[in-house]
Length: 169
Image (cartoon, rainbow, N blue to C red; front, side, top):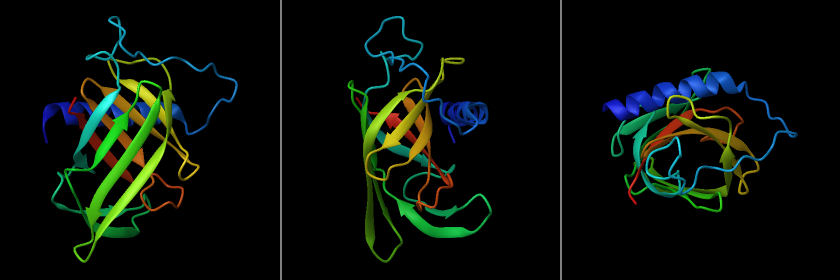
């Protein structure tokens, strides 16, 4: 595992621990640092196209066991490097996860909006994604050219999978 992914994983853990899982409907809707030279995130914000680089500490192409926090196994999957996350300047996201169970190829698609979830901490920008596809929300952290998300892969309401994406443009 390379150093930027390790740092991002640590940042994601710290941000998730600080989030507490609740939302504040009265909180202001902060603007993300998009094309802002003073942005705390390098490369002028988080918008762009990202390719999958890591799944729960494993690389695309490897078999990965996905399990719930209680240890119950969801499945054994192989994720493809062509999986991508698109973050647009209008704060819309599109997530496409290409994977297989070694019997058939599968696709998970999710779309919705994202917003800043708090102030940047040591260059890590906490984000909240709200899915228009599934009606749920999940957290993420942007750090430089990396975005890591904590995702409910099986749709049972428990965040069970960490995906790390690296910006390609």
